[in-house]
Image (tube, rainbow, N blue to C red; front, side, top):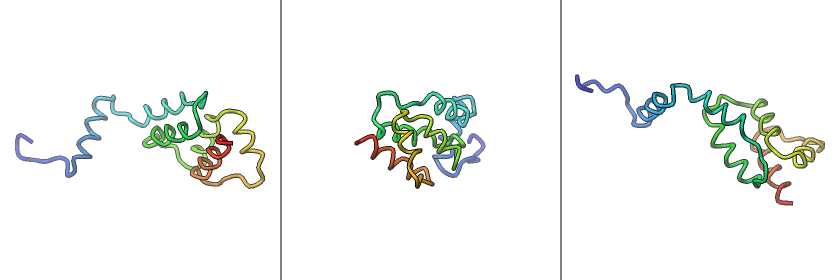
Length: 105
């Protein structure tokens, strides 16, 4: 900037670069580590889904690995009920909806 050059066109790009600099530059690894620590415990499924969506952004997880990770995070009762149904969800959003509905019941 001292010489009049602007490296970033958008403020968001600049903020991403700052976060990388202060986090050690590997946001994906940080997100993966956060995902590995996640589990439902005593939380409602709504809270689990909300946290999962936040952490998964930028983690590199997609499609089937993302679904498998989500299934491992939920408690055993909900997981068993979801796995035992004939028509298992195909997309992660469908897994979120069904797991939340089962948790409410």
